[in-house]
Length: 385
Image (cartoon, rainbow, N blue to C red; front, side, top):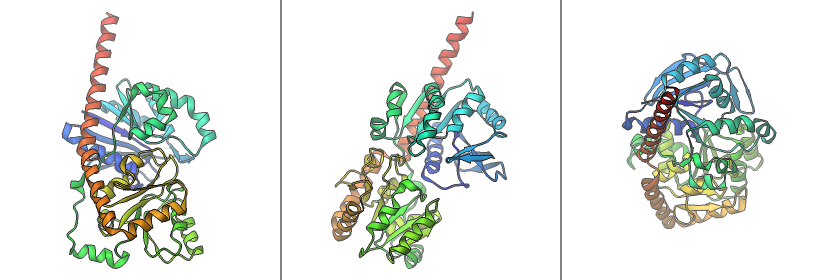
């Protein structure tokens, strides 16, 4: 079966949680004989195609961007060609231009969408966009929510509840081999960052709550390592300088092996996202996979599906530096309880969030929508006769 994934950005042009989710879906569905491609935009699409482990990446020129929504006009014909190749198109929401592409392509086959997040920030633009969004979501054979929490609290998903299936995001531990405690590479990373710190990994965006984390770090006896880059990086660096925080390390973008060594070296994973734009939190999954306790905020999204308060970690009040600081103080001051929460986070990962579990669920959805499409086609042919 051939599946075309569609999203506005992808590796190597960007490195974020949603891009990693697409990659994991592609890799985990190979066991079900699924061949994947990813259609995406790039400011510099040279070469236009990349052959990667997860499948072929097809990149077209991004002409401009409005409110984080990339647009392409020259790429419409290429999208039609890729759609003709596919048995199923798998969209990743939100990307409003994809809604228009779907309408322009006139694709006759089945399509599904993974609904990663409500549109939170662009209230005026989302009001103007709503008719196109409703038409697009209404045309999907399935809408996949990434957690029961998000499904239960999304007004948009509630309008299409008859189409919704919940498939939690999963990641494959086999692709992230742990290092031995005495591995020289781990020591090399420890020489730069230290040990026993709190770790944040992700794109530095407004909703990640890192300004709240910096406020919480004033006079803390421990360190936090912030790994990643993004639109608010310079703003955060200025805030840390103004607060005179010598216990905060900005690591920038790091390679995967360095990231995994950091997970191994940290005391706990801290994830202070305070808005519903944070629909899941792949970093929390990676921390759970590495048996680390988790700190997240309760925003009615998938973060609280991964992290169960006082079992796998601590869930704090969104936007509250005091609540976040109390959680970090507790895990730092109670290492045995922190370690036990980490073990329970690993057990929950193995039960619910493996790549194999996610891949099997998506393969079943692909097969079901193709079968339903074939049945409709046969009924239409008989009606025409």
